[in-house]
Length: 392
Image (cartoon, rainbow, N blue to C red):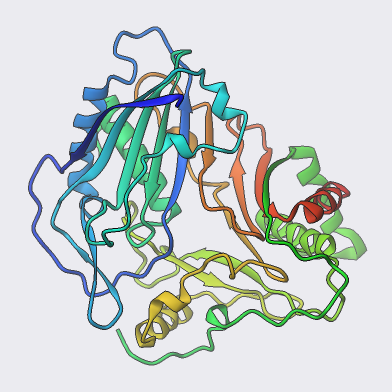
């Protein structure tokens, strides 16, 4: 065992909160990410008491993070705002930090939680601060997706770091649209492609020059549409995955795209809103025109309210498998702004469950215009995917 736990406590908000019972909580599976920091020469470098005190203060604003889930009679999940707290673990490693930054296995850097007793018993946020032999530090965070999405998770961490750093913090029941994003995947046309349950994850870098080549290619044949970097890269990833999988031309395939509803809902949600406001959508037709305005999003909420069992709609291993693809972008999240007062974050990796066909776009830590793509595919597809991705 390379890591030993020194302390494991449940931290509550520093001030009491009113007990509430929201009616409905839509969400997905837990997900995690890991922050890595180089050592500096300060005597209080990532001092545990500073982190714990700042976390308790931060939970006053993010009180839902300190709560618990409960199953209701109608199969929905309710968030009970009882302020039981988040799990905070201090751990020490006998290895250097690069033991983890050079591989994708970060399981030891997040707390292990016993989920056997049911959702009413486990915390919605668990954190582990690990101190390495080299002097570096990592913060591993695992969130329950019922209470937050990726943007809220990054906002929670950055707000916590601001407190530690001393910086002040601040229904209808009918649907109007068909919601194909919640329907079953299209059937697979029989091909010679080998099927396997083995999946590997890779992190692939796309430089600024490579992204610019993609932009130039979008202007070929007299095209005058200005596509965003995400639009071009998502299309390129989707096409490369189809090629790697050897799909026939008449195979229907869907691209799942998470849409942030904060600014699209009317009225828009305020900055700093805590919660999961991610809606799934899929391009329809060759143009991929998406209608994701206030009317569509509220129709999606109505659709979810009408479902007798939301568990059947939770995205999972089946959602992004062949012939489909899911692409999530964290490229514009201020991930590297989490400065607790001891230096800038140098490295961040997501610790999500590896699903075939699920891709995550991440920013570079150096602001050099490059992007990183994390994607999971069967080994025999991964090599072909990389050849297509870089063959631009």
